[in-house]
Structures are given as C-alpha cells and as structure tokens.
Length: 355
Image (cartoon, rainbow, N blue to C red; front, top):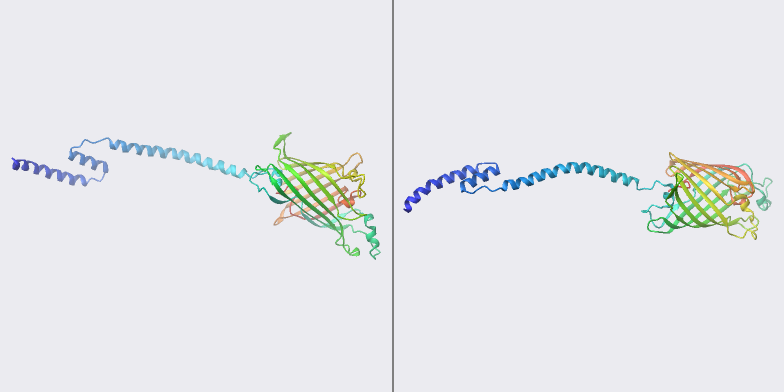
C-alpha cells in the first residue's frame, strides 16, 4: 500500500518541481506569484487590487502635484511681491523710521548735511561786526560777498513703541558761514547757528484729499549763535510738524510758538516779525533728483523769505550736487532782520526726507 502510494506521489512531485522551475523563470512579479499559487493550489487573493490602489493613488497624487506646482509658483510670486513691497514707499516713513522692523534706537541724518564752498550774497550785513573791523588794522575792513557755508545735522531715536509708530527723538543741527576767502580780517566764521531739538514723532496713517498724512510731531527747539552781546542771537520755540505726501510729492507744514520772553530779550525781540509763526516746505523727488521750496513770513509785517533747492542724484558714492537760492530775511540768525539774496553751490549727503 505504502509502495503504491509512493509510486503515485513521485510523478506528482516531479511535475511540481518542474512547475516550480518554470515559475522561477517568470520575470513579472505578479505572474510569477500567480504561477506559484496555481502549483500550490491556493486561491489567488485580491492583493494585486490592493496594491493597484496605491499605484492609482500615487498617480492621482502626482497629478494634483502638477497643479499645486503652478499654485506654488503663483504663491512664490505673491510672496516675492509682498517681500518687495515690505520696504515702505512713504518718504516720511523712511525718514522717521516708522517701519516696524526698524531699530528701536538709531542715529540718522536729519536736515541736509552739506558743504557749499561758494555762497554769494547780494548784500553783506556789516553793522553787527563793526567792533571786529575796528580791531583789525585794515583799510578794507568789511565782509566779502563770497563765503563758504556748511551744515551738519543728525537725529537719534531714544525710545519707540513696538510698532515704531511713536518715538522720542533728539536732534542737533549746526550751520556755519565762513569768510574763508577774506584774508583782510583773518578769514573768520561770520556766524554759526546751533539748534538742539527734543521732539515726539507719530505716524497717523490717515488719508484725505488724495494725500496721505504720515507725520505728526511736536517738540522744543532752541536756536542760538553762541555769541555774546552785541551780536548774540537766540530764541526758543514749540514746533509742530505735519507731513503730507502723495506719490513723489510731499508737504511739510511747521507752525510754531515762541516760548522765551521776548519782552526781556535784548538780542532779537522782534524776530517773529521777520520769521513769522511757521513755514511750509514742498518736496518733490524725480529720478534721483530732489527739489524743495520753502516759504515763511509774517504777512502782517509784509516780511518773510523763500528758499529753493535742487539736489542731484548721487555723483560719487553718497555725494550729490547741491544748489540753493534764498531771498528775504533771516538766512542766518545774525541776519534775521536783514534782507538779501543768496545763491550757494556745493555737495550734500542727504535731503530733508532721505533715509
């Protein structure tokens, strides 16, 4: 019986071995697995279908990836555009560092910093300097109409809110007029004006009449020439600033109130008759050029002044050409009640609204 069973099984085993060998030669994975299942007598499961689903899923996943890539490209473009627009386009925002990512404490250029080696004045105010002329042995003891002028000016923020829209500032400006070509009286500094300021500056972010209101400040300003009598000049003011802008055009409106005692002031008690109670400056920027026009005065006294300037694009490094014209009273404190026309040419580092 055992021998008969063995005789029957041996051919079957031989056939199975041959089948196994033929299955092993099949390269396709699924067909080879089906071949083994057929030899072993197992019923094929739906595993291939299960494996097919991830393949379809992967394919389906790859198709949206192509769409998402386009979306991502648009997203990248939008992000780049947003990044490019992050630096504020506002002239006042840049000048006063209202940008939220600006440093809380910083030092910046303020009023124009310039050196004008040639400043021509139509008339010279010799009267305040008669004592100087008398002390110099010269038959030609008077001021030259041509002199040099320069100004240094900076401001520093000493505190600001987290969003940088409100800050406290200290500023300092020094302006000098130098008779550098006047060897007859030893080339003196004709006048130097010192102007420290303390102010609080705020960014309103309001719009009206097509203009954006970007600056409101209030501060204390002291201005003097540091001289003793009879050529001492000084006054103290509370000064407000209102900054409006539209595209490349800006208006800076500055009303002020004199707060020192003009009744006891022997230096310049009538200075507001000539300087008035405020000034207004128009600023226009075009292709790197800066144009300004300032006007101030006291209409009741029919006295005042205008100043126009042109600053070129950068010529060498940060240096720019600078041309200034002035007509009226008070181009400098010593001349507050003296009328003249002047024109100056030189170089500058910054205009009134530069970063």
